[in-house]
Image (cartoon, rainbow, N blue to C red; front, top):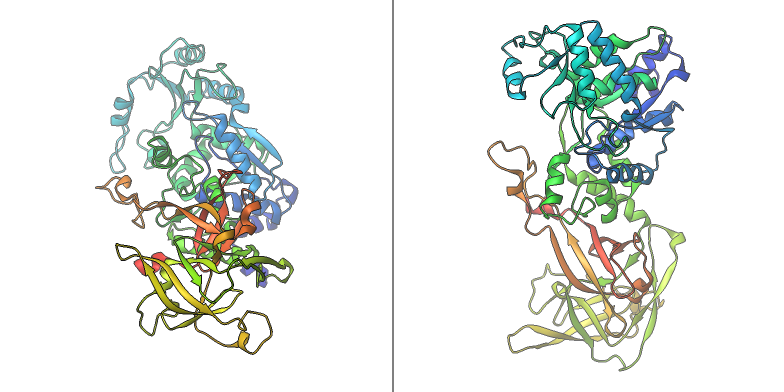
Length: 558
């Protein structure tokens, strides 16, 4: 076996075996089939990466098909957002398709099944049908309408289509086996009445096909060769195949359903229903809130397509579900941004530093490297003056030997600038430090080439010149939940694990080079983390979102 063969994942092995057994490579076709009932989230990136990745690997077309069979929950907004997310990730689909394109064909096939005695109209309540279905260990029983005549079923189904009946009064079910060990095979629903306008077909239909009936038949219509889905659909495969058996033309390609483990992430909710609850109850500001695991939320938080793809690649394609530590995703974004993000200086919790022996009214423009990881990034000029802002936590009036930042009678270096020494402090009436006074060594400027500039000190601080500082709004986003598996507790609501400190909004001070930043620009705030300019920014207010800290602070907390 070649090295390349050994590195294939199990789905690629299936495809390779199919090709070896005579499948024409030109028959390969994949699809990504989202339901437009919410925004895509980080879990979907695995399915996206698998399907579109296979398309790229085998030079095969990939369809984007919206399984839009429930107008009660689906909206054009979600369709547009899904397309935007996939495009942003860097993938292209060959055809944009919709299950609603096939409503007439699906209806015609359902009529054919009725004529063959393989489908019937059931007029019971949903509660009665659920009781008759049995349990995994107890077989179901036939309902009172299971043996309706073909003629009566055809008449009722047509009248359902024509809008004669109210919602919930009738459904169409496949007639398979109420005692089948797989409960999904116990006369599954095929159609229900929904008198709601569809985002594409308007009011043309008032009956809508169920997902299980629609999904495989849509794959067959599109001649998808490999229907790839997450592991929870494995029990559905038997039903998928049964439905295909009823319509298949043996001269045409038969789709093959195969399942992979879904992507579960710690400290994260993946249910679109629960994510919608967060939106509707105002816990977050919308689907693209940077605390949400949606692709649009991650994009607004400053994540990159490359980082997300690297994360999915690292997780790999497996057959068993597991929970991936969110720290891996955060590591991938740090690794990517470390290569591409310009370094800038911003002070989040400022205290004034006065250099008492620096000339009053003087400004120097010092050279600052933009990114030491990228030589082509060049440098910029930053202003230096007598009064600076530094981080309040970077100074202690009294400190032990392990504190390598500024304290009295101790030297540290100001990034890209001079060595300073703490001399004294000024306090307000409550005893809070309002100013730190220090002196500087004028011969110690970074990069000056002097012997003093090469002098080693243990601490280096970032800073911003007070007269040149730009006030900016900084949104310090953190994980939305405090529990690694917030929806895994049967006795508790996932909302109980909301992190009360998932967002802290502060006013910070930035160096003047950030005056011309645009939404989506990413930066490393030196010594603080990675940040992105938010779309809420304007000429009057610049807003930054924290993408990730420089290190995983949660690892220390936990």
